[in-house]
Length: 255
Image (tube, rainbow, N blue to C red):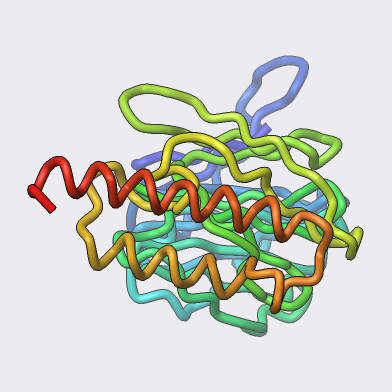
């Protein structure tokens, strides 16, 4: 077992005895997240010192340092194949790295308020990244953003990848059911819930923010553009949500 701490260290523990086996020192600030590769050879650590460090769990030599984030690196995850490292940061980005070489593969723009959790589905196809108000799903292979959900960090996939669990407002946990699209390598969430959840905005979002979210979803799910079998149903739900918002907006602001 490995643990991370605000004392800037990572500690490795015997899983049966609980005995401290080794302390890893290199970070210059709080260690916020750690991940171990599927082959148990590499440990990745993320820190408020704006770096990611890759540790060999066999030689314990000085770690490889990955730099690229301009804020705290708050979350790391490794895909099931053990070749891609995903990191999230308070700088509002998600970055994909080649775990073997340390090379930056791609940067995904995300939340202006920061990214505080990342998770990868068991088949390695879908990446979830979470901020303080939204959760976004990405195609890990292409970097394409699939959708936005009205949740927050933390996030976790079920082993069969059909369910995503996220944080929610006011002490709630949200459970998102998912279904396969016609391209069976991509998951799309079922669109349901309150209008702000369907549109992927905060409950107190202003008119311009809601309009922008509606237009983005319309471009993604309009049947003229999206040929999947669920596009019509999703677009209908999005339209109903936007109508519900407009009705509420009219009541509050008098038209």
